[in-house]
Length: 224
Image 1 (tube, rainbow, N blue to C red):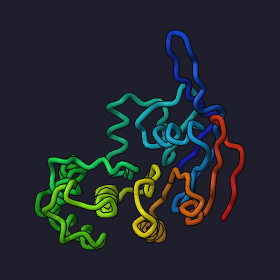
Image 2 (image 1 turned 90 degrees about the vertical axis):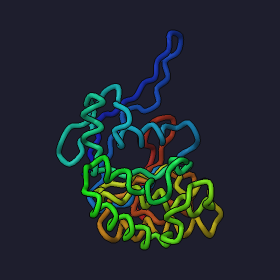
Image 3 (image 1 turned 45 degrees about the vertical axis):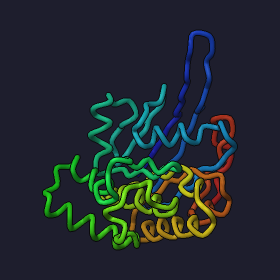
């Protein structure tokens, strides 16, 4: 599903050149659950942003579903992301002025799904995430664990083939963190490919494979 060859990402200012990723080569098979680990500043989030088509590499190839997508223009990246990639962030990234229902519905609105189908699908995914009773509430009325459930519901509402998760339990206590990892594991069992950045060895243990980054390079890959 994902194939990366000789990927580099360099950030430049007038005075400084910072190599965030250097000669990255990796593959992720469809249906796999991969954890990316490493110290702060090693390039984990930069790599995830490139995988999610939020940024382009400086050089190298990124193949997604047999299509080279590493150097698309922003509009093309947006079109490719729609319905194919779901995101789960540490900070939830919910829209405060929207209810839970409206937040989860948003990706379907962008995809121009009919209102009646949107309603059915949102109700179904909220029920699955055990958050239906909060459908009319706003994010600031929810606990951290509830907000992350909403974020996962929003990520999966369009049935993406790939979920990218950046420290999904980072702001949660251990119980809510376990609930989130159980949800991601269940989605993976159903066939969704997951790539997750984490500092947590416990969270990484849910993955099939751990990729360790250091100074922008892959240093080890461990099958679980």
